[in-house]
Length: 268
Image 1 (cartoon, rainbow, N blue to C red):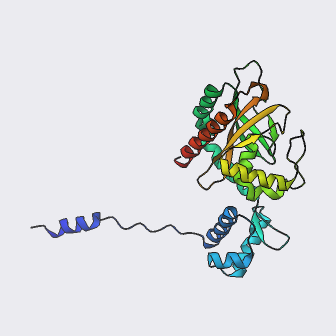
Image 2 (cartoon, one colour; image 1 turned 135 degrees about the vertical axis):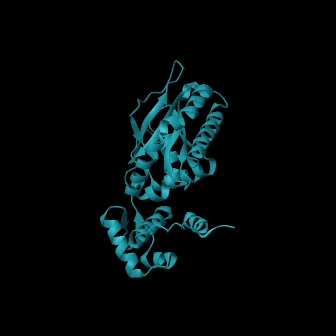
């Protein structure tokens, strides 16, 4: 028979249930609005957000004003709101902790081995892409861009692939900024809209000599689980090097390589 002290010891040893941490309700509501804006295909109005998030209109309006003042949201001409690229910049800073170069190294090496051409890892920087890693071509005639070099996002394969994934947030920024570099450069927003539809349907982007004459590039986006592109893998090829069937082969390889990295990111 247990004595009273044993029963008390057993009672005292029973762990108390953990209390849920306190959450600041204002911060939680503001983040909820920001997440909704970031995931939306277009601007959202106060009434629309109020209904969807079950918040009062005055609360939504006040939080949108705060987000706008801090640079995370901006009002449109029709008095709706959209997330800004500052949201993207914060996300990109977080992504850097994943060490994107290391994560992409096997995919880059596979592309280099299979194609023999120059392969790149690019990330977005405003309306440009920056090349943060590369493997040189083994061909006597090759394309060239240095690590830390840049290219206009609307003209190269890696950039167009990133645009396709992030188009709802970046389209307005392109209007009036589609500069011409060659006769093949896309310079109208309508033509870019059509190009984005094609890229999304096929899973890769093709630069047909839109940045440099007679240099083609092929890119596919590296995406986070929510679909936002944080970078892209690409292959750059002088047209003179292309043989029958090469383009289709490269497009499929770069698509599969980017998909493999995106899957690894989702498990990180």
